[in-house]
Amino acid sequence: MSYENIKPLLYKLDPETAHGVVEFSMRGIDCIFPGAMSFFAKDCIYNNEILHQKIFNLNFYNPVGLAGGFDKNATMIRPLSALGFGFLEYGTFTPKAQKGNEKPRLFRLIEQESIQNAMGFNNKGKDYIAQKVKKVYPFNIPLIANIGKNKHTSNDDAINDYLILIKDFKDLCDMFVINISSPNTKNLRDLQSENFINTLFTQAKELTAKPIILKIAPDMDMDSAISLCKSAIAAKADAIIMANTSIDYSLIDNMRNFGGISGKLITQKSATFFKEVAKEIYKDTILIACGGIDSAELAYERIKNGASLVQIYTALIFKGPMIVKEINKNLAELLKQDGFHHISQAIGVNFK
Image 1 (cartoon, one colour):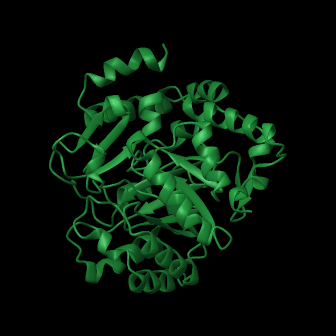
Image 2 (cartoon, one colour):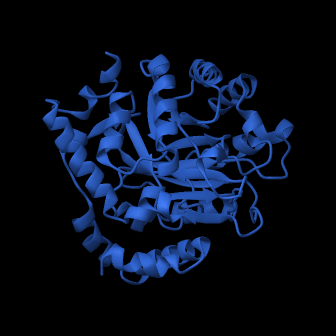
Image 3 (cartoon, helix red, strand yellow):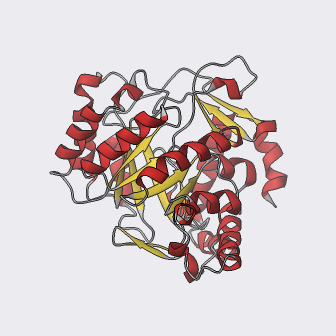
């Protein structure tokens, strides 16, 4: 049965319930019929050396990863890898388990192929997640731990939450993402300051040699975003993800002025934000593009604007599990059409 046949059934469910059904199904198949994952992988994985990269001394067989938020509790790592991703991100998770914000907190914007979410870092906490990751790590593709602070941790004490997670998970991931850009934890975005970034990265680098990545919001003032990224790079941030969900509610016509918007509604906003910031910093760090990417063409444009890797999330919900293979296969064709023999030749070419 194709995803297009299953999708109407899922859409009859509340979005959060539907996500739970998908998680339960993937975990069940992986547990009861582990060989089924190999069957899916044969159909979903696209392998072409033109897309292979070595970044941070890690092998990325393609540049398309899954963004944080889909697998909050690291329960779907094996089945998700069978969909052909080049890397996976688990989390966002926090030191202590927390329920997140009040429901309903997840909304489909079907006509716009977008999502509005106000989840609030709901997760089962570091101890539960560590037990899950220990069962699969080291893994066959790079794994990123996306870490955040607990809701009731004040911003003055926030750095301790991040350092606790880095210390406890430095041997359970290949990279970290510092999430200070979610709009769904009160005052979290206030941590997008040069002082906090400098302090955090200085102390974090004393705890681990694993790459640490900063993820920023697309709603920042452009000059402030560039300044923050440059400050992070100076403080030894290994990469920048641009960008998280948006709180630009002028993009939607409903009355919900809360949560973050992802998907097609923020494609242009995220692309413009990425390009303007990237042209100032792409030579100095690794850039990962995220936000409204659902095709090879959109991924390719971000790559030409300086991205070494890209991430999807909402596209998986609206276009289904074959979207990863589709993007990678078409991306390889686009590279060949432009005379490139390897993806590295296309990175930042629009600025050269």
